[in-house]
Image (tube, rainbow, N blue to C red; front, side, top):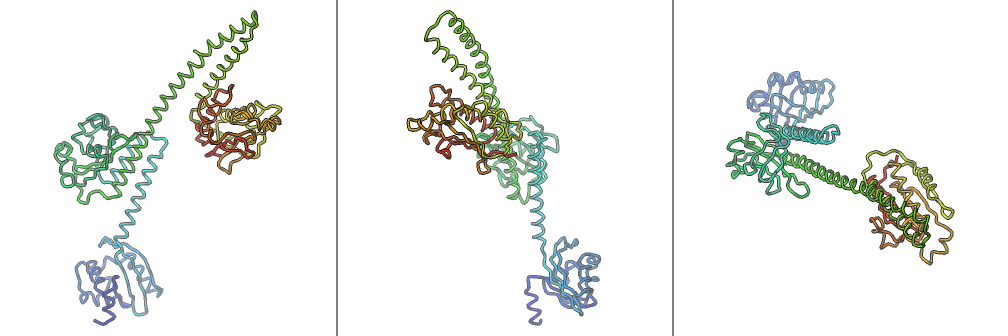
Length: 509
């Protein structure tokens, strides 16, 4: 063997050469092994030398290998390609270099790489299916779970999948995908007889490709002995920090290769979504109960309290027709204050609801309209930018009217009365400005005395006020309306030293 042939034999690539009659003139050891299998047996180098490649390997005729090699010889230009050779169930990366006397071919088996690429594409499609399933707004929670169970069974190669919950010592099937039809939603079994108990107790994903080998202590349970479950992967569902149940897949055949890491990750990912949805449902149910209680409270305020309040006001008016007493003014002021508290309480109950429908609203037009409701000779408003936001116009109107009214009545939107040092400048009135907040939202500010930094965390709390006449609901209502829109509201120092209210996370229209 020549030095050149020794070098070719040490190559990681397979290499062979044919003459212009397609007869083998050289094969290195790697090429001999591969082409020997392609020829139908383990030919050695001497047996293939001198044979026509197309006669030795007739299955390669009319394949892309045949076409590419002939194209290289016809054009006398190198070719590079990747192709699968069906008889060997293998992919090859090929580079062929022609000459007037024949063709030199370098090739390598890239089947592992191709299988990995195909596996990655399959994984990507699985996760896309998961996303499409959970993003389907027309599907119910149960329908989405059914889709996830089908996706999981297909990706894991199992016949069974289930979402179940734990009630005391019972294991309750909520959503089931069972090709045999033996298990249905609503069926129960003792938790101690299931593999899921391990996931519930440890709060960790249980993976057993072969229960008899991977978790032999579970092989004496009914799931193994009676139901014939031989492999299992299940993840616990945590809702509000407590185990709710499990999301699992299982089969009656053991898996020689077990479950891969990405398959386990897929199960955990789907389980996390189920946990999130169950937790969200609980939160929404609790919010619904709170809203019902708030509605009941608002009803009491609106009817049971307002009626006697109206009676008291009417009786006071009748008495004042016959008797003039200096205490009547104080009584009337007290009744007016109760009326204001009732109105603000009802507003607070109503404005805290989440905004379900919004529309484009011109902030400049709405601000001008609201200013007309509270304007005075000693105050002015300036809208510095023209833009539109998506909002509930009636509830946004309440925001502006509350902030404007506080500015006009108290010298700043904080509701804080001016200090002695501010008295002289305050006699000239207050200016209010509305403008764009760096594309993040909008602001409302005034040039009043402002809000002390130590009080800025408290101004949005219900009942907070520094005025003897205030109800303490105004800024709480502003905060509730902002939260209902999904906005963030904060207070800081204004451009001219007053109070500046900033609304962020605002959607522009």
